[in-house]
Length: 533
Ligand code: 3UK
Image (cartoon, rainbow, N blue to C red):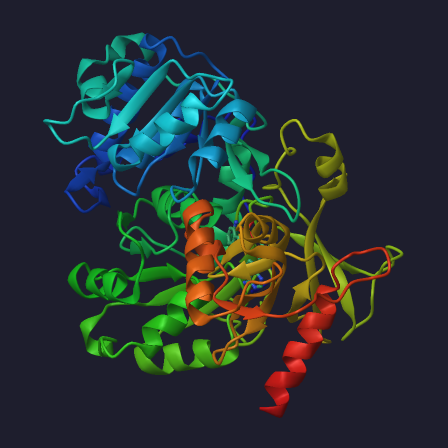
């Protein structure tokens, strides 16, 4: 990354949706999005964003009110998200794989006045609403089959667009760069998910930094992100960055298995692909891996957890296209430390993205030296304003311009950063957070389980998988069948990436004299067993 890099700063008056529409006015006929059902041109995107914004007003939604956005990746997602921004309404984009209890918390916490939901998720959202103290008065249902019966307070997404009186809101609401644009929820090691509040300017800042200077997309690119739009990673990859240059975006609603991803790479020929390390490892291990000639990739990115060197090297050797590992977070919205096409070292997270400042500090807040492990802090224009309604966690994370990442890093003499683990107990599995505490609580709800502890173990590819140590109640015999049943029990209650991939039954958990579980002892024991094997 050279020194001559220019970083555009967001204008003070900024409505990010209007900004993207304005930037792309000359591309009305160009395809902005391709989803499983069809295409959406830039002209149609602009028209539908205005219509959706007008429809929100007609439904009685006002500026700064929150709307839950729980939908699969189709063209309705960007229309809804940008339509909200255009109207100054604040979308709360959530993971589509959660259960009713999670959504009930979010609806209540965000005081959501409406919910935009994929038809396939309507049942889950309805049971969430039934158990929530806040009742959104409007449901907007995306991609409902023509003959589906909908609840009385529900509207069809396509009907809203068709019926919108666009004259009501020809122009975008005049927001400023520091106005709240949207929220994302991030999970912590204990307690409820944190509502991470982002501004219009933050979206602009991610495009002006990582988007413009690391990814280097052009309007002839076709991007495809395996990470969904509701993740900050996916939002940048499949909305902010490509629309900021007038590129084309492929959206896929289904789960990003290696086979599903191969189909997109071969049939739709994206030029830039975004994945998480587990997916890259799964693709390389698959017998269906397409040959280099079958794809048109020129650049790939990886984030969510550290990309093992091996995986990056093998992927590049096969496809002849680099995989840029970079670290981002929900709090910083996107990637702030990354490898770049002209500065790449597999096994590292690269160097600071121009526009961001980094610091590695010891426990006393003093900068550590070269090759020393320190806590990573980051400063840049895309950091969240706060965690909504959570002063304690906001204060611990957002420190006068600096954001605590919760990660440990080492920097070498040439300025390359290597990941050295989290400073809390959180695990990253398939690029997504897993809180050992949450999984342990769930395991202990099983009628045969007395106690449990969850740790991360490293698999043959160098990636993190979760493993539970379970103490059974007296008189219960451990068995493989019981392990399968316990996994199923967790899968039914928590998001799919959270169930323990392995379960060991033990007689007793290691604990401190005050009764705290010593997960580090289990980790040490696991490491010793792995090296002796
Ligand atoms: C970990 C990494 C090592 C790290 C994200 C790109 O992952 C994203 O956001 P989350 O809030 O998690 C943040 C935490 O994940 N992590 C992410 N990337 C890497 N660790 N190497 C990496 N390359 O612990 C970080 O603090 O889910 C990623 C863009 C936007 C994002 N929100």
